[in-house]
Image (cartoon, rainbow, N blue to C red; front, side, top):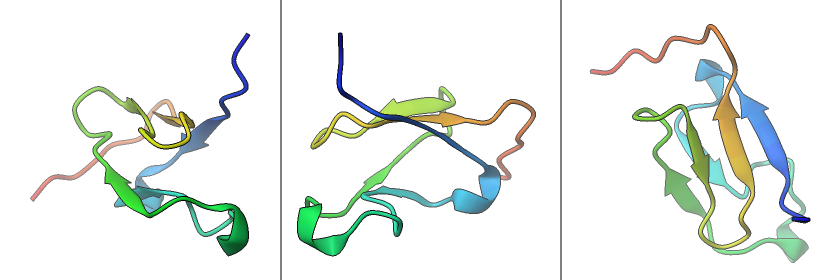
Length: 62
């Protein structure tokens, strides 16, 4: 069983980075930007938190 959290995000949350603003600064790792555009999900290499794009969300790429 994994202790990793899974967080559902929307297109408004992009660009995605971990830790997010909701995480207390004292308990966080260095900020890393994560690319969720290719597969719709990604895991943080530091804390293993899994981020998943909410169903029906559309990412506009420039």
